[in-house]
Image 1 (spheres, rainbow, N blue to C red):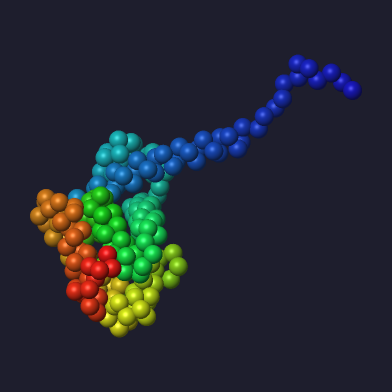
Image 2: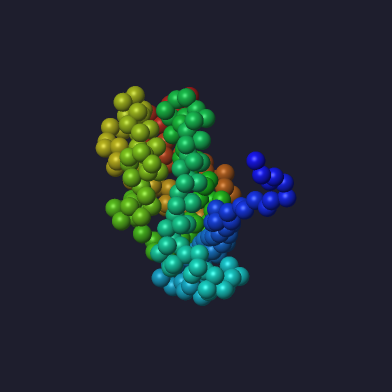
Amino acid sequence: MGNTFGTKRRVSTGPLKKRIAEERRTMYLEVITDAAERIFASKGMAGAHMQEIAAEADISLGTLYAAIDGKQSILSEILKVRLKGFLDCIQAARDLHDSTLGRHLSVVRAGTQYFLKNPNFLRMCCNDRSNWASSPSFSILKGELGPGGFASIPYQLFVCGISEGIYVNEDPGLLVRKMLALKQAELIYWLDHDMTTPDEVILERVESQFIRAFCIHPELVSQDR
């Protein structure tokens, strides 16, 4: 056997370079989407320019395009991150309670609070004043009722609540859309009044409106909260 002491081992740098490049791109994507969210919130996506996003992110236009290829891709990245955060938020809120109504009220509050904590994302979703309950908005906001869609959680809670005699007996999909419209109206009102209303006031109003709109016996709800 030959003596291997002193022999240099060759280490492939390919995987390491790839990992570093991926980490670098992830870092730039976070900076870019944060900047774009602010620009989209103030000017709308149609009124925003890639040069503005690069300047807001404090990077060159070339660096921006090296990380992502355009406004639509940036929007998709923002929605992916924000909607995952929203879904994680309402899933955690649902799991804090055992009763259907307790779970649903917790989901309503948590979902509203998520937008209150992310006003730029909220402005993005409200810029054109489109109705969240409309079919185009429902699709854009990934409002699928099936697994993975953010509307799947309130949809299933409405199904359970109807079967338990808690909620009005209507199409659960329609109830989800009514709930979104109710929440959007309250949040737009908050934006229009310069976000001065305290969060807890907004949350209490949304919860009370939900109870009045969907519960068969709203006067009895306090006994189950």
